[in-house]
Image (cartoon, rainbow, N blue to C red; front, side):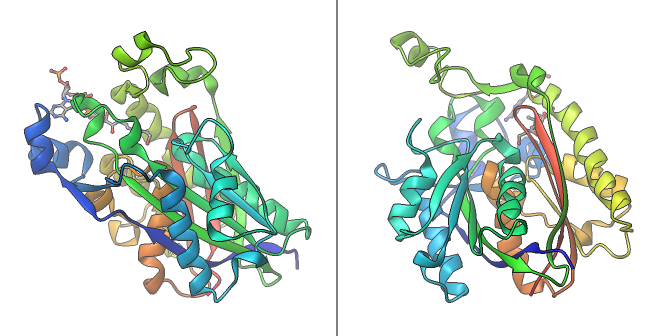
Length: 328
Ligand code: UT7
């Protein structure tokens, strides 16, 4: 049987501070009811420590994942971080995280695919296991979204939260782990969701700062319209090409951007909401951390052999699906 990349450990890190809808009601012209009804979000976490960024959260999640597997950081061959809020423009956040946890034998790099970061990075990481060149790969999704939110813009500040979560991948020859994946991207949709300034096109200046161009710019309605179709399409594509039915899927593990997008995906797949990992109410959209954070929260309920469909849609535009057979 071919070698697949089994997920052998998963762990999350969530900052302590809880930003509830009721607090946002005092900051912008919104109501908790509006946020709940339109998105499903009730509260989200915020990393308040001024001296800590995305790498800190990623390292905390990584250390927990290693401890759960009783593994030393030095055993990791490759460490991949996916994030839309890197510690710096360069070097890669993954390099910093490797140093923080003592993964001195790993090479490391970042993957950027915004909210689809984790499924992209999991796909990339699994290839290094499948080829036989790497034995222990860590994939971490981490985002300090609060660092790029404009807390005077009600269109975006209510949606996102901070978090990190990590998985360890190891070879398996019994069909467990990442069985199949299909990724898509379409750069023509850049205009719907992006960070205007801070890159080489619009480097930081007094103007970019005063015009809030380092914050998230999003046409929510446009993104919603495409996401609701594409996430469902790719989830069904994963089912069809792997002979999966609503009955033999244990869980849908969707990116947590909007409860309504997730419900539409489940409906299209023909599965009930009891088979959907849904925690957007507690954490909002944590970008690259959202899917592994779901895996970490549902891990106690998962059984060896469970069929999971991971699916995401995000800025880029990027989207995709992964079929995972749970390994433990
Ligand atoms: O993870 C990356 C991918 N991102 C997404 O998938 C996000 C996709 N988009 C969405 O989830 C939704 O479009 C939103 C939650 C962002 C917005 O929900 P919507 O049902 O599409 O609302 P809308 O944009 O159509 O806005 C309806 C109204 C507008 O007012 P007018 O123009 O009708 O007077 C908004 O200004 O709601 C207003 N609005 C708000 N009202 C109260 C927007 N944000 C808020 C708010 N509180 N926080």
